[in-house]
Image (cartoon, rainbow, N blue to C red; front, side, top):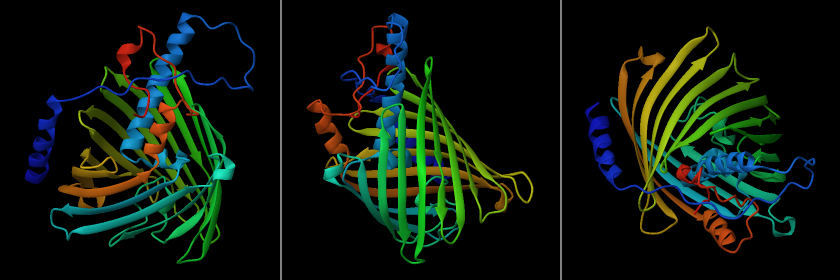
Length: 350
């Protein structure tokens, strides 16, 4: 516990210097398939600006923290290399190496990606994070992803590939739909995937998001996963508060609570964590300090303090998106807020 408190105090010292989220750019292109409606009024413009500010704040945060949601919708050529060590009271150090590459196929105009990757984790279990290919294995994998639709409101893609060590094939669609609810946004993400050896896997996620002032972003996530090979259903409730700080750094406060429905409906674990991530030396180099306190059912909910120290290298992806936005070529430009919404802050990824 002393380890957690000490590191949390050091991180909190950086809170005095903070900056708001980036400001919005150009108006989003109209959907040619949309039905004719009445001429939008001031209320419509305000609602759209608020929704876009929240949506693009979410994209900035997900891109900065390399969240699985952002990676799944990133259609640019990107290479990610990461190394982390997890230290927990009473346990041996745990090392984790991850490599992922995405290659945009030029002829398909950001609609087709080839991907490959793998993860080496000396103690990985099937209960690690819910919503990614690596949930079910640490085998090296490769495949392709085709984007049928990619806008702020809707993202639809199909993924297929193979896990090399087990020679298992997988295929399935992914859908993300965003709804504006006044000063909140609701994101629904549904993935369905079929594996030749292990059968069906169906992860579902809801994100309810809003902005507080210029530099605070709140998200409450409810995420669940059903797998044919498992007995019962696993779901998680995860409120998160993110503050963007000066000089390309951000801090994330999170409380994650995981439940299982079999053999009986019970609380599996609860984890309080602080995640500090900063860009250092170059735009493509990041380090993280993530202290946490975990309460697990297997340990009779006795508190266990731990910390993750990580280093990540990211080539491509975000730098290309910045260049597109500077030249006005982005497919997801956003509206400029009115005076009524300017205090809400973010929009672009810069």
